[in-house]
Length: 150
Image (cartoon, rainbow, N blue to C red):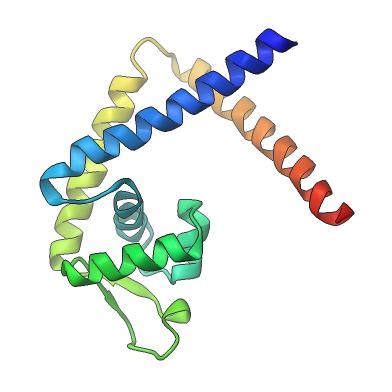
């Protein structure tokens, strides 16, 4: 059991670190960080989202997403529609230059996913994602139990 725990936690941590590094390296020419990449990618693929919705899809806290949204707005990649006193509830949209970057990001993600999947069959990939999904749900349920006990 100890070997399984070490293998699981080490692999998950290494995958997460690699993903963050790849995001940073691939986007360095645009001065974008990992969280910026996620924001632009989800706005590109899903359309206008509020800060709350971005928090949910990016799995980031509100402060981090708010700072990222400010930076992306200053860079001219996103706009708030309609301009509202409560930024948290106003949808954010990509500008034309944001959509250009979004396309570049989506293409890079497709390439990297292809490269990362070399040697893995569609069946193996489906089984992996199904297993990871179940593990994620089970771990979330354990965390939810902590909250209900508190």
